[in-house]
Image (tube, rainbow, N blue to C red; front, side, top):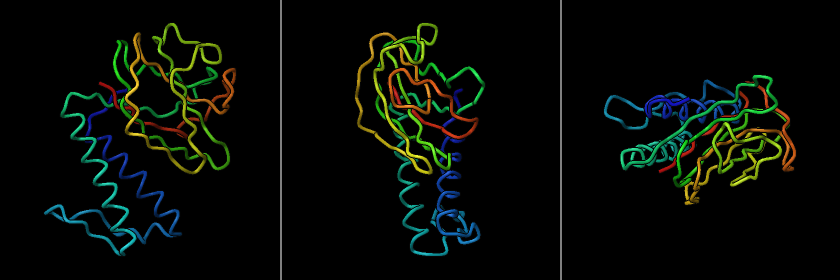
Length: 181
């Protein structure tokens, strides 16, 4: 599902803010983001450092998208079809970067991408072009992939690392943003 950059940025800020609030033990400790002039308004030096980092990441994404890159956002559906499969790009291109998070309390997730269209991708048997592990309760970011795919780019989210694994993640447990050009 494609979303506007503003929605993606808001989603990213919300996820990071919630993760920080969970880590700090109190959602109330995260006071706010910015004032009307764009200056960070926070309750502690830790909040300021975290939100400065998030703000820089969002501004970098905005710059990439403005430079002809495409940003695809996906959230696991848990639809019962043994995997979450999503066609990122139906044409050849370059996988530039990925950021992902895993809200599951105890299971790692794996994002496996194939150099195939969704119609030609079979999770657990199609060759994997690019794969990452997203640790439970954490995230993963790689903005320097620069890997060329010649057919299309289709990614799936599963619970197992082995090439034959296809165990499905639950709805809303894992999400990612993938940048291509």
